[in-house]
Image: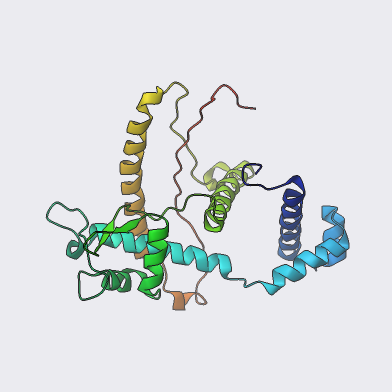
Length: 255
């Protein structure tokens, strides 16, 4: 946080928002009216601050986070199609360099086939921004990465870090308070004695094997997900697998 210029006061404000949201959701889940006074009582945050935060939250679009996640999922589908669709791969199985517009194989048709409701210009901007695709000297597009990954310290990258950290913590907390047969998968394969010169090889191994696993799983998830129009007919939830690489330069300083 210091590296990103976040002060202790700003962190305190963020913590207040998190506590207020959590208290509101907890009270609503218990069928209790989440009044300003009740939230203030259980969080220790002043009632006026509670009212300010809740009023700001109510003025925001409730589907903003879901929309961002949906868009990122569609971007992943575009990249997967580019690497897997025979129309977009060469005889060696590598993604072809393709023009922006025109019939198959073209980027606009690739997006239409795999993202559905997102304009191909938006997809192009997003994938170029994160370095997943690049423009060749002859003006065609080249796929550089098989998956959509954000990085850096811009707003989207910070939102992504928040989302990943939240998902990891929710799984760990769920497992803390659940019976063995209802716990979610959580495992690791690590060593504290890896030679530094072996790190590039480990990165390559993880990128190849983990990407293949995630692609297989995404295919299963796509085949088993319910159409949007069936949302009201049956309950749906978000589920899947997230893989992260672990790297600690000071394994003996775990304080």
